[in-house]
Length: 79
Image 1 (cartoon, rainbow, N blue to C red):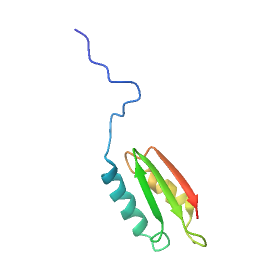
Image 2: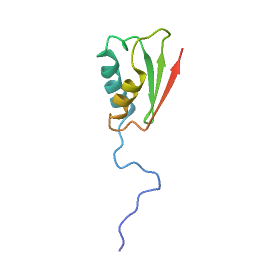
Image 3: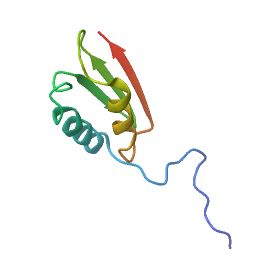
Image 4: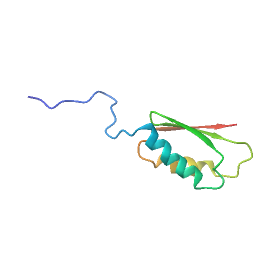
């Protein structure tokens, strides 16, 4: 009869945490300024923990992470 409808809020392109975590890890480790940064990925949300006295451009790092398909939000915590 009708076309099945997905639940409200369902993502058409979902990615697993491990896949997103691997891509974020590669991005951060690829830059000497962000290699020491810690992060967590959970359900498309990336939490970045920046150490004090870093020299990286946080805006650029966040922008680069936002370009990873499946990332829905980013939180930045200064330690």
